[in-house]
Image (cartoon, rainbow, N blue to C red; front, side):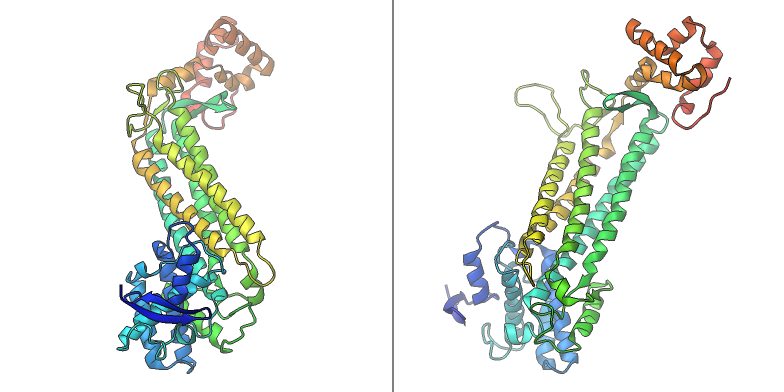
Length: 467
């Protein structure tokens, strides 16, 4: 293998001649063989880094502190990366020590070496364009890295919200399809009062809609950045006008209005926005899993369980029990939810562990956030396409459960009173009779009165009955 020699604080190292990364990245590869997942596998993070480096080059050019020719080479290299090129050169592990320095230097080196090529120089000829002196000008890992995380998290959440919208619409479609199917609602797994299957599915849609809004609100926190803070927020080594100018350029590049944090020292050490966003992701996970628990329960059986709905059969369910089909899609979604809940704890502890002017544990925050948003998006996709769209109702089973349920007696409370209704319920339960049979046998109501009170379309909405 042909190599080139690069050097850093610790000495000289041989770097593959074809590599766009350099000695800092090489040491990170050796130091952090943790997850087996490189930062290059997170496309949004790499695009965010390229946007930041491009905006910085443009700002420094405008300020007259970066040669326009060098600035243009950096910009062109960043444009290529934003278009999807060279992502395979971002090779450091996503979890790393150093508060993200390895990620920042991986970006600096790749951009510098590609810019050198565009200028007609060889990789590693840093006397012409340097990763630190030019690509990283007016910057620190401590403002570049958290800003990149925020942008990547923002984009990831937007994708998740889009998938949630699709899932919500699938539930809404089913709510319309099932709007006239009466069933028994349950509290604490016991018969309660009638509702429609459509109302049940509309509830799932409403829950998703609420969480979409909460995610949009939390993701807006990601648009406050600390570029210009440099090392700890004082802005040392940055031009006085750099923070304002780089924010303008970056806003234009990403298509969102970014704002510079009002107190850069606070913004550089505080990870509260990540904690808040993760908390909303956990909320989404909890409610998705609750919905999947319901789907599994409602489809249980099919003969010895609830058996009220049918989930699409996706695969054979057992290596020993012929004909068994399991609710594998709700099961996998719930497992994603458990992962997200665990990720939230990781993010919480990593945010708490930050000391003094910097949190060194942002890499694991990033890893956890990206997985939570990405896996939830995938879970929403599979739940939509492989489960919800194909759900059918067992209408006869649902009709029988309503007719045989003692829960119907609740509708008689305003007419015969709680005490009489209680006696009716007890007798019906003891004798295996229906509520209607007991009421008529005791002459509490006429058939016409009973039929009026127990009209299916009247049982699922507010109504005050008088005789």
